[in-house]
Image (tube, rainbow, N blue to C red; front, side, top):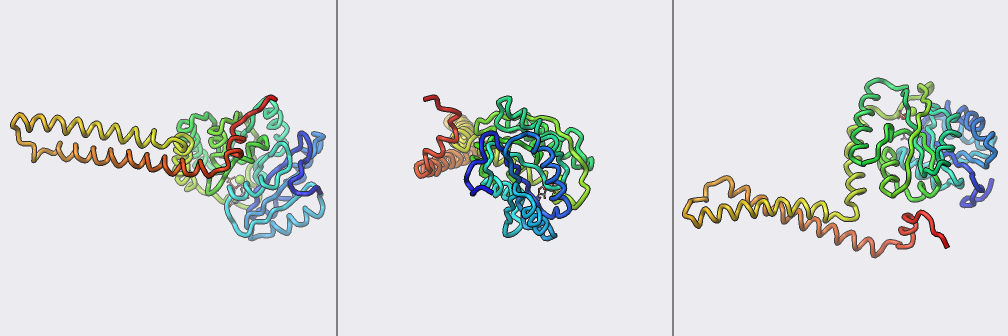
Length: 323
Ligand code: UDP
Ligand code: MG
């Protein structure tokens, strides 16, 4: 095995597999991966990330590691969730291309060459789309609603954001900061960073061992994440445009109402009992608050921008430099 940090060479592939209680699947998955990757004639590695499994997954992985030099294993201290598991794998990855695949054998490694071929057409991220999803109808329906909403909100038209089976150019994963449940929005996060994203239909198989960790409640939580992802993606660098715009709109509305009431008062009418007066005052106060919230957010951002590593951030945005 080469030392960590060293590249595996041009065109090399790192497969990252998040594993949580999949003791019966990991070795089978390796066989399938080997069968798919060996014929490509490129260097490759498989990085299993044991995300706090409580079954025999880690010993199964240790055996696998002893048998196959392409295998490395990262063991997390406890169950941190899929996003953290993927991040841990990305840090280890030494390939030019990174493929993520679920450890439960539901994704079919034989599809990897197709993902790679699509990547080579000039995309930075190719996402799998489980066209014939082998899950319950309830999950499929919720997933459809979820994907539809997420596509509309983010402006990135994909059928299956949450698919764990994806291929990336390594730069894409280097720039990702996944935490919480953000692994569901990797395409959206990459899209906001300006990467080119494609989607291809992939084969999906029923789960034969173990059980799924996620129920339908994930989609409800997912909507909150979606809100924060699309908010940060759109306004994260210019919050005043949102808060200031909204504040100005409400504030001006309120001012209009108050001017109207003032003119009535001058004309001699009594306005003290009118509900419109309360509305006018409320709008002005809320407007000013939103506006100041926007200014405050701008102050926080400029503080961060000054301290952040400018070079690193610029590098994330540059596609290429001709010199
Ligand atoms: N997984 C993980 N940490 C977790 C939950 C899941 O690493 O906390 C892994 C799991 O072992 C599998 C993948 O993430 O390889 C997808 O999980 P699962 O099959 O439960 O989700 P589903 O396919 O039902 O969406
Ligand atoms: Mg699964």
